[in-house]
Length: 423
Image (cartoon, rainbow, N blue to C red; front, side, top):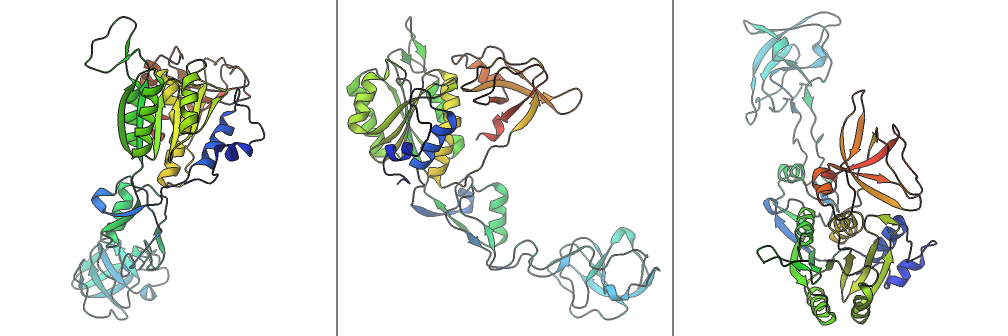
């Protein structure tokens, strides 16, 4: 299942390993080395293949287009007939339509009426657009200045037979499905869907629809995790809320590891809370407890329970989402067999400045918009507390402040990740 058979081996390659102050990049590197793609492959109809991960390279079985054809309505002729620096007069000898080619060759001094997509007849290599043509009494007048080969689509210019059309690791998009349909491919070989079990922990949590006694809160984490998993394209398995009890946690972990490729939990991994969690997970698998040099989301547990990768996220709602996006997301994509894809960043001016302590990576929630003088600017949503879920709802990006960076002065630029790029 993994590149490194034990978590200790994955961690051993880190020169700066410190479980009490682990840099984000180091934690991500260790996780990447510890997970690998599911091996099972299945073939699914194109209509069921959206967002599935292509398991093998797909070679084009045909040329697309199958013949040279016209890129627009007009007249086709031989470029050798074009007069040098003057207009050309040709005799119109027939017509060609998409699906109804001209039956014969076009000779010297001849032209045919041709429609978009129609096969270029033998001898023709150039098309004059309809709007530039003067056709009268069976004669075509071609104005000067036409380029040889213009408005002609070449055989195989979209896809050539025997050449790769789509490469393995690609998450199939609507355009990709159109490409496969254009090749006559009815089914796509894809990785089996990843199964991810998830649950929340905490005696204070209540599910929607239950009464809310004093000191209790509704469980929002399962809903955000379910949504993030769904957008990622996995099969989510909701195991509900698990009480702060060693036996309840062990039971949940056993069920999750028996039914899923990965497990995501929220809560129960911070200092103090992790005491019995560490004991339970130590009996069941290979798990490390880290304090990541980041804000929000410092506590993180990672490893393997049975054959399932395990991601123990913190309990605060914003920390759950940030930890998922920057640790679990990429690992799950790797397990899905998806090719690595670095999220694009937008450089934006921070007109108000941002307070930042060096020595940790900070993920602030921001609103990205066009700057009055051009370019982009970003302003924070307000309170950046890890329990203020509103800050994620109001934001359209995450401002990523690097590990060694200090305060951001007004007018300095920062890197932003747009939410639309995350899933």
